[in-house]
Image (cartoon, rainbow, N blue to C red; front, side):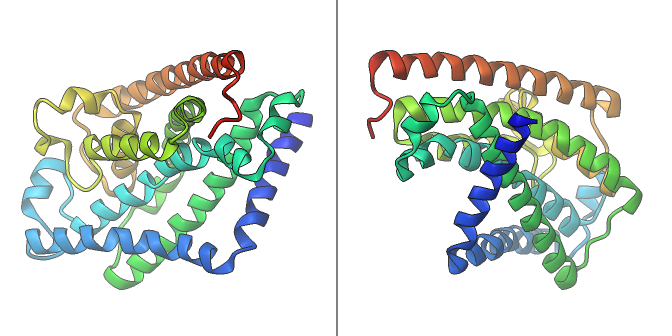
Length: 273
């Protein structure tokens, strides 16, 4: 219960900071919608309309807009790990409270997960706004019965992303310039995850890397439940791969965090910026 209270308190603290700057808070809600629109327009231009026979042959669905929007709104949770969790301890350094956290009896990962709780709720709000505005503008066709299993898959994918976030938070303590780490990983993971295009069109040299990404299995499974996307490995293998990679990334994240935590304290570089 004590740990849960700390997690909730950390999340509430982040919300208070966000809403203290209304213009910035509004920007974080509206700007993600603008990120999606160019990809929707590009898909409509290439397909010649909202339906594509080629997309239907490779994925089982011809709905270009819904295919693209689902990929991007759920992939937005990558920001939870890279920018939310990854910068959680760095933000404490901005505010001058990092040393206080490190001498607290509360494990550091609790603060990181508190930031993750806030980021998940924030991203969930963004998801609703994105889906609502795009749906009103272009129309989205999803299977309502698939929402529950889709959110179950999202929960599994979030576990893996939490592992990545813990890892990034630790690495940032060492390399200091965290935006380079987060930006680089964001670009790589987004590129090799089939967000706005099917896995079939990805170059052969990139596919093995894509198979190591839990986001590949997660996004594909979410679209399978919501719009009937065909899964190249079947649903069973897709969920198995997602569970395995989620566990693997969590373990790697914890191991890297412990290693980096000891390194910065041993070398006395924790307070450096």
